[in-house]
Length: 257
Image 1: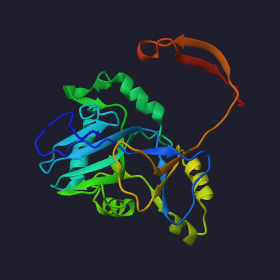
Image 2: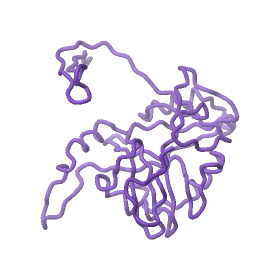
Image 3: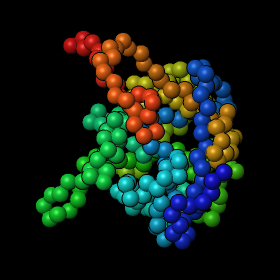
């Protein structure tokens, strides 16, 4: 387990290597021991906040995201109201239809640090809005919550104030019991998740602890997949780490319109 900060401001909790979900083998799990979260297509990020409001954003691989997503720093600090804390979540971009759009997020990254344009007064302005969507609470004040059950962590997460919900929000979590109360099934929830434009669902055992760096059976992901027929028109050889493989494809598909 990695627990060393990539940047070490005083009071910032040490980085925790993220817990990972296992594929469910194509069969969505079911049972009263589970809760279901929407699976978002973004950049996994650990947000670490010191009591003085200092914020460090760290990627899944330990890379420092803080400067790149500086617009999230103040809203995340406000969540904890003067105490230390740590969130696990996804940095995402929503498109004009209100759906998470990974392509827009990648476009933003491709322009960093050249993604800013200058307007009157010479002030830089973000051209692609980002949002931090939290799904787990790993620390609150002086309390390390890694060993607490998932449902307890989620309960404390839901109780936190979100002063700027445009920038910081919560990934939806639905218990199996709630589905039964509403006469729904996990499969119907998956259909609604698909209609909302999300990637799929993650089923999490409600009594499970947070296991840093582990790919655990306690978290099972059920991604949505779509198939279509396409023509491969051209390809680009890979460079750098992709040398010897494909770097990109140009595809053609039928447009029924």
